[in-house]
Every structure is written in structure tokens, then in C-alpha cells.
Length: 242
Image (cartoon, rainbow, N blue to C red; front, side, top):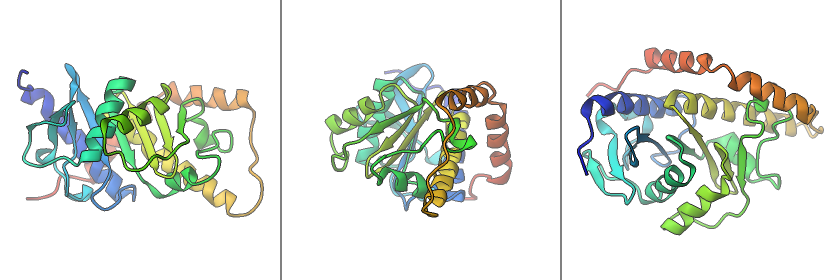
């Protein structure tokens, strides 16, 4: 297997590390658990992922690890956590998505504990951006500690780019780190809105299926805001000083 081009790796490492620091800044991280990954443009069997044991707020580009689909570390000075490999390798391979972000962020995870298992994409304008994009893994099956469980989770996404994993957390995928992170951030925001609305004890006021689909198309049709948000985060959250 040929060595990865450093000129290609560096910007991807920088963006992945930035997304991790941003997630910590926004309260989307959980200890040193959960993982973000991005496949190499020239070889989807290899991908970059955050290392085991580092808090997301302290991760810089030099900490990102390059692995193959079997979990072998190809480049990097850190180890990789086992469940990261089983979930991310399978998700990249089965869905074909370039970017895979997996978190246990509070409000989105809270909705996976309900009988509905997921966000109601007809309840708020922000939630409508995810209309038609959510797959639900309705059957919690324990920790993802083998290839079979990683593949089961990936297939449960049913070709969608957002997955709610029952009693577990969420996965958000995308074509670029900037777009996937923007979706992850806003997914947690709209899940928070729904949890707050549900806490009133009053029923949710839903709009029509047609209107939800229309708003989703409007938002997905213009992603400049996602790029601008990520560049703002780049200015606000520089790499940690060593």
C-alpha cells in the first residue's frame, strides 16, 4: 500500500482536529470517547481518525492517526480505540460516505432513549433540514466490539446520512468535514429545542410532510453558510500550543 501524500493529509488533519476541538467547545464531546473520521480522497479504504485517550479540546493536526480498514495504524503516534474501528470502518465502506462523525451528545442521545428513537423533522424549522435524511437503528445490541456489530449499525442507516442509534447516540456523515460538522452542530441544537418543547407536556405542533420536504431542499441547496461557520471556528479555535 502506497504511502499517503503529506500535502493531501495535512489539510484533512487540520480540519478533522478543528472539528474535534469545536465539538468539545460546543459541549458535544464525552470524556475521551467517540470518534470523527474522514476517508482519504484517493483511497476510501484508508481514513484519518482521532486517537485514543486524548480529550478533543487538546487535539491538534499532528495527533490525527491514519488507519486502514482493518484497524492497522499506518501513520501517527497514538493508538486507536477498538469501537472506533468497528463502527467507522464499516460506515465508510458500506455507506460510501467520506466523513463519519459519531457522538453521544446530550440532547440527540436523549431522543434515542424515547420510543420514537429520533428527532421529529416536522416540528421546527431547524429540524426540517434533516427531513428525509434520518435512518434509525431501533435495536440496541451492546458495545460495538466486533466487525459484525459495526456492519449492523452501518446497514441500519439505510442509505441516510444521519443515524439515531437506539439507547446509544448518533452518527452524522457528509462529503466534507465542514458540512458534516455543521449538520452535527445543528442536529444537537434542534434536538435540544424538541426536548425543551416536550418538557412542557404540551403536544408538538407539526407542519405538513410537503412543507418539511420543501424546507429541507431549501437548506440543502445552499451550503455556503456551513463553510462560513467552519472558517469562523478556525479563527476562534486555533490548534493547542505544545
